[in-house]
Length: 510
Image (cartoon, rainbow, N blue to C red; front, side, top):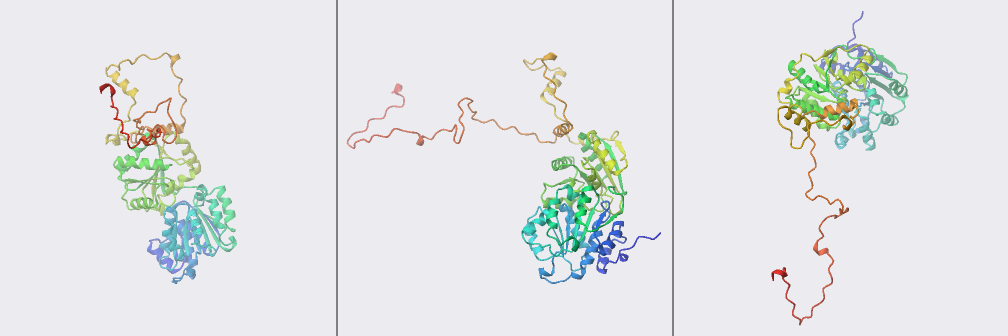
């Protein structure tokens, strides 16, 4: 049985081998060992592997090797056309890919940059117009640069589509087709498609994008990394936050990535955990790019205990030795579960993923288990002290007026004057409301959260409207200035006639 090849045995240039050694890598991962020789041979590749297995280096290293003959130190932009285009679905993933390209190409004269939305395009224009051989971009911002005529794609030799399944989920396929129409013909360029999950739609996209590709899969499709220990807790929605705090505090963790489904839910949970005393921040699509980068930097530097994120962070977070990923809410798409837990257990390290499952979410857990083709162990929260956070300052849920009145009467206080204590006959009672749906129950659970701000009622107007005589329109119900009132024309008084004395204001008192 032969051992795995080294990077030197893959045929990479000495400049790249030096950069790989500087990064601390000695042995290529399975996807790298299989994909790099095929890409160096000029073949189209459709590669699939779990997240965290080194797919980025699997295409970045051979791209740099193939473009080395065109590297030069000329300041002329014409000597640095875009020769490799890499498309990524999210800003974070695009930044991560471009950082890898810079890391592996630091001993070469090849230029690279990353363009993405959320920031002023004017900051990116000088760099792009100055010329780069390798361009990493999100589809929308690349089209913006094309409209600004700052980028031409006529000399692209290698086209990479990273996380193709996420591109499909986010609706980027029309933009990708527009970009592909500006590239050289498929037969005249090398095309690489990488993804952690495959589907029928991805197969159709590959048929239109790739030219007789070689399929490389280092593991069974749609599987999670074996280095990630998976478990689940069956816990009601209202106890999830206390369980997160219990896990973080009892284990003394500093880096916990917590996934939720919605942007509003991410901001709300981050605020609540911050009130509980945990260093927390949130990252989602409504955050500015500067705020997202700041939160990611603080999280990577272990200055945050918990980072609450939506699935926008499931592709693009590359953190060494991330100890734990918590699925605060299970995703509706089972494949997203694989990408979420792939943030831990990267590059051969061990990791852990815990899912908090409300009874309503059991159907999502069943779909995930079908995709993984194995069950996820489920535990209960019995025996855990989840009341600690409530004792540290969390308010008890407030009761309504009717409940408060019943409590007062239970303590012996008399009912307010005129209030009837007897119940109405069954025939006179209002019909019972229909049973709420699951979504309504969840929204009601969110509404019962004591940390939610109470909506303010609009203040009563000091000038109530008259129901019958209310006028509408501009200037309605406003006093008419005296200067605008109609007055009879004044009769001119002759100069020789003495004016009459003014009448008293109150004749009866004169």
